[in-house]
Length: 252
Image (cartoon, rainbow, N blue to C red):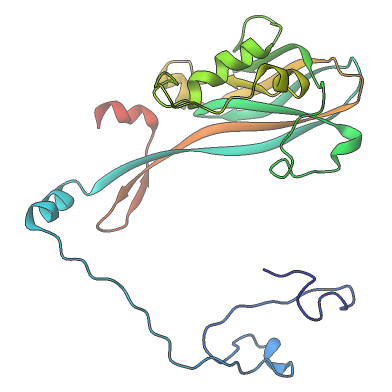
């Protein structure tokens, strides 16, 4: 990690910072070798790598060899933004021309004047009372929600509640850490599930757009997260990785 605490960084003139990491006592960067005191370090030349050896029981080793293919799926994200939607302004924004395996869309309203490219993972909170009227998500030109519904906390609850809860959020003592009604009303999130379609349609590339009306008194920016699924097979013996379509899971 490089920051202003490192000696010299806080007093260095503006320009390019050159940094490298090396193991042993020799710097292999041709430019940095010429710097005073950089060509050699305090550690030794010999570096050892220790790897733990594991001996499997015969039956476990046999099962491991037979079932050596593992199928892995996970969610990935695209982050985009829609900026400068004024008070009472309507928008119909094409987020993506074509995306497959789309699972959900998350929209976080933020004040345009206070945003200043804030890192949503630092703050993560929508703008106070940044509500959207006539909100809907269209996938392949088809409305995901009802025609221009009024998205409320109950809508958010219906979309989010059964998506991330353990066992559909029906197991006693386990929950999905939903925000409460007052918290959502003050700083709303807009989350819509887009995977409630046949599998062949999920695999197809479809456009994604959002529309609505800014009901806030402020000019708003909207952070948009497209959540989609990626899958591959991993051979745990050879290390080979191969992509495969979700529709093939039915025959595995």
